[in-house]
Length: 242
Length: 197
Image (tube, rainbow over all chains, first blue to last red; front, side, top):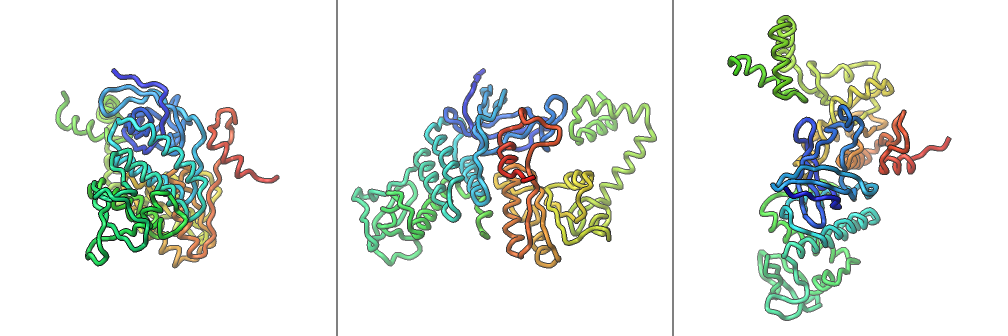
């Protein structure tokens, strides 16, 4: 039976399983998204017997995880916090929950993700330091890395025909899933067109302009929705009435 | 192994938390062998409670009345509203005997991955209360978990829109606890929200 010891991990989600056990989803660098059963003080913090007073594992906290098992559901042997939780407050918390939701749905189980793991960690730190109203920048940068790591990177420098994307407000492109951008004339009905200059700004990660950020948001949403295959993201609801 | 009725009883007892097959069997035999009266009483009260107990129309806690005892009490300060996650939290706060206002029970917490959004925890009902009731303060007593914090922020934003003062219960070192054994997150909270003496 496979035994994994002392792997770093962030908890993505936790749910009640049986009376004394919880089901936990993790993101780890060498094993990607892992799901395991954790025998812990269930619900309400204080458990019974020797577990009394144990606390539930929390999201956004770097942990050290040991588990064993060959199937999809692992048995968690130990779980320890390596640091304090990354302090997210207010809208930053919604953003963190959003990241966890897209990771839960988009990441295949047990696929190594060392780069994504470190990106997740630095995104959380960046979120906790972000100023009000600019949390979306962290989300966009993470989404672009996530898409690239999943093998669906969006190429902002060249269009479908191989010619470079023109950095101008007069050139228009349409985005097609799994293909990329193709140059079109203005006036096509029914599709959203992206301006060349906005695409070049996203390529260079220049987020100063609100317009660029809203274009990036639309683009990422279009790409992520495609890979979600029609599943709606509940965490988006939290941002709705802000 | 057992006759159908006993089997059914054992299976039904397993609906209780912490009761596995062996405990369920012990409970069933205890009731049938030694305590028939107790069994009758248990059956009666289960039937009655399951039929009559519902949600209080104001605070959503469990009660057999239309409005619960706390909501109808004239000795309660109706301008103070404490928001909690579950009816068990109401009981815990009541036992601490420090609070004289009324409650609102969410029956859950915001948890996007589980499909629990604002509608599922009755934020629309709560917002109506913000708009119509005369409140001086809303106390947010959701659990100090990630979801609990997100929930309390969400409610705080809405309460502030109606110009109501919002407070959050303090997090810190439990009485009788030892700093040495307390997790770093709690200690960091306790440090950052320390009080001047």
